[in-house]
Amino acid sequence: MTVGQQPTFALAPPRNGHGVEYAASARRRAALEEIDRHPYAWFHVKTVLVAGVGFFTDAYDVFAISIAATVLGLVYADATTLGTNADLGIKVATPVGTLLRMLFFGWLGDKLGRKTMYGFELIIMVIGTFGQALSSQGPTDAVTITGVIVVWRFILGLGVGGDEPLSATLTSEFAATRIRGRMMTTVFSMQGFGTFVAALVSATLVSAYKSYILSSGAEAVDRTWRLLIGLGCVPAVIALWFRLTIPETPRFTADVERDVERATREIDQLRFNQRYRPDRNAIVRPVQAPLATRSDFFTYFGRPHNLKLLLGMAWSWFALDFAVYSLGLNSTVVLGAIGFGDQTNDAANCQETLTNACMYQILFNASIGNIILSLSGLIPGFGFSFLLIDCWGRKPIQLMGFAVLTVIFVCMGSAYWKTALSTNQAAKSAFVFLYCLTNFFQNFDPNTTTFIIPGGAFPTRYRSTAHGLCAAFGKLGAIIAQVVFSSLKDWGGKNNWIGHILQIIALFMLTGLFSTLLLDETKQETLENLSHEEEFSYSWTQDDLNLPQPVALHGQPEAQLPPPANGHGHPANGHAHPPFPPFPPYHNHQEDQAPPEPGQPASPTTGVEVHRTTGHARLR
Image 1 (cartoon, helix red, strand yellow):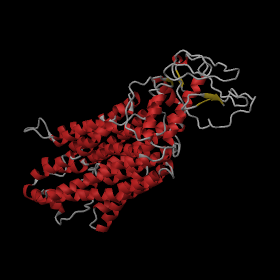
Image 2 (tube, helix red, strand yellow):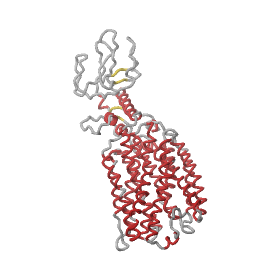
Image 3 (tube, one colour):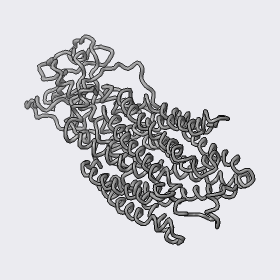
Image 4 (tube, one colour):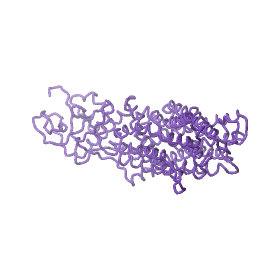
């Protein structure tokens, strides 16, 4: 060192671990900032596509049953339904399986990792969907088509339940802060496209089989519903390989697996668009970090603020799914009750005598009606949400949605009887317009925000579990909605109580408005800031602290950090250090600040800066 040259301060971490603790925490924060501030890149696109295909398949398979249930009635019961109990069993089987799997897969996502579980739920969905398409009825009533389909739809629900919390968590943890809402909205909007494609495929199949249906009736119709359900496997099979090979999220690696060094390497692979290749020879040095234990879980959610958030999110999802599944799985029933889209002059005769022509007309009208609902409500709603979610905010959008939906459902419930009994086509069109508005505001507002908010409101070790809890509570609302709809809709006559059911839905929308007031705004906030807990200090374990004490070089206040992994000493003072674990490089953006004036020692309270390339550190 020449006279007048500024000394370089490089201290080995003291044995109490404070220096290492600083470096580990700072390196973790810097690594996560790379994700939070990263511009939109290919790995964002890949995450959205891989996660979105699952939601597309979910919606296709779940809401296609609205049309398929009508087909099953035509084929196996010579009516537009299999009967109240059978229809209820088919429609409620998937939400029951979804509820159970959401709780289990949400917990496994935090326990074993997002990557470990991602893809298995898609395999279950493919099996459940394919099994439905091959369902048949025995020659006697020992095995009915209803029982077989209920079993397969329950299995389908197990896959759907695992997909939702894992996709939400994985997308939020890969997303940059400024675009997290739009990325999660894009993933969730695939539900709208899945519903639309299901209706489009149904209309296409019915039109293609028109001559066959008119000549053969139930035999031709039986083929249409099997093709409709079975084609739902195609996108899931295509996406399966990409899900099984997607990398683990760096947040899970750093916070749950406690491997900050590997998390940094994974982020570099994402940034430079490198293929994910786990380094099996890398030395794992776990940091000391908070662990997800039962006592820690109850301690965290036992805090009033965290419990308030969890309850607010769970009830908002419950109220929303009560409406979504009441109408989404029964849209064909509601549209048929008001006679919308009926193209035949003898509609009443079609209900009494199901001729082949009536079968075709019923299925075609149901398909076209669902296409109209999707294009006029579902997809535009998701589009508006995409545009406003990151600038307006989640909470204002959800508040507005529940308020508007309350008013619309009150109007629909009050006008139902006049519309259903009216022969005025304008009145029927006005009711359908209100129906489309409900789809629009459901998906513009609470249907999207109830999915997004839990995906970013909790710490990494509980993020998937908490999202699964909220989503499971929503599916409980969906199950209750189906029971209520099937049990009450025919009170006092066929479809007579649908108007009152719409008014009950309005009451649930009002409760969702109040539960939203319990929530915090999450836009433009990092996931760490939204965890509602003090930032923990991440440090390497005591075994990694067997490092040399600082030494003076030529009388100057200078020392060397541990040398590279080959264990050779630094030649600055001519002495060789014994081998010891390498200190992980960390680049601090403040490392280029001006050094202290000559003769002025650096402040020992300002921490340590470690150069990312050379491994040297200095006090600041």
